Figure 1 (tube, rainbow, N blue to C red):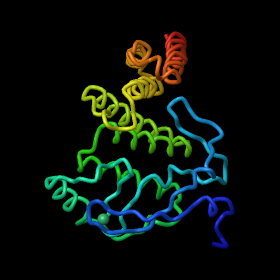
Figure 2 (figure 1 turned 135 degrees about the vertical axis):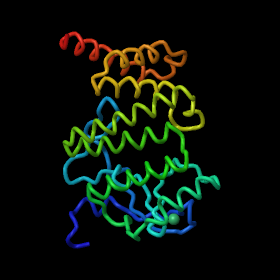
Figure 3 (figure 1 turned 90 degrees about the vertical axis):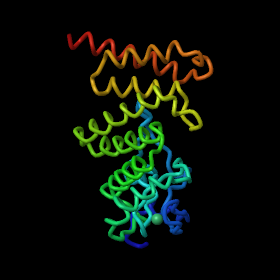
Length: 235
Ligand SMILES: [Zn+2]
């Protein structure tokens, strides 16, 4: 541990997780929540941490070292027979054993998300979950000042959020309909699609649940105003 940066080492602990695909048990690092207080949070909920602090997002995905299946706590445990065949063929058969269970750098964090997005797609996880993975990956690129890749994954995230709304597949997840609509709006705004953004912001501010989710309502009003202002300036 001697050559690891102080602070980061203290924040991490090993957690044992169970691979839902091959049943293998392995240890992976997680960040102690009390060691991970963001100093700022963006309008799409991207947290920012001080330099030298471990970013919990780097350890969000568990990657099974045995079979390559990558997953998060939000994944459902059941895998259909059809999905099993696909995962075996397209992940398991190509997997060269690697360990993501130690401290991760930015590249390993990025790779863990790409593996999870692929696994979630093959497993046919909910659009809400896929949208969340794409958004978290976009945040890593934002921290790295890689605008092209950030936009690429914001666009994928917004498509998933729109699909989540159309199919109401957020039901049974920790994400509410207002949050899905707000994210669709805010991600469109960030991508410069002001018309779509305004359309979704209005769905948030007129939502029947708006008085129970005041924080989202207030954010939607603020970001709507910002979208209108930017749009007018651009014309
Ligand atoms: Zn596995």
